[in-house]
Length: 112
Image 1 (cartoon, helix red, strand yellow):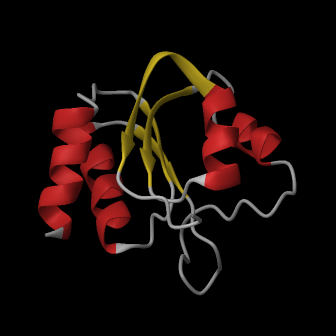
Image 2 (cartoon, rainbow, N blue to C red):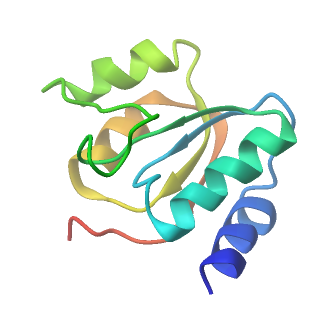
């Protein structure tokens, strides 16, 4: 089930292109980690985040209180594609950093 969810959300909903700027929240989860791998395999620039070091050893921890600024640092030209797993403050920060014609696949909103 996680594989089909990741595949459909990434390829069917977002229609990714090589060199897209992709952000994956909850990238340590079953679906998020697959989306990150699909994006890297396609040739996208990918940033994934998780809530703690224990959950995610090789990704980005957005510990800054200003999530908008943290994302701007990783995506100075904006986000082309966001794979949503968290919602809440994370989603609000991402929306501010989205590029025109950016795509969002809403898989879940665990913060809600």
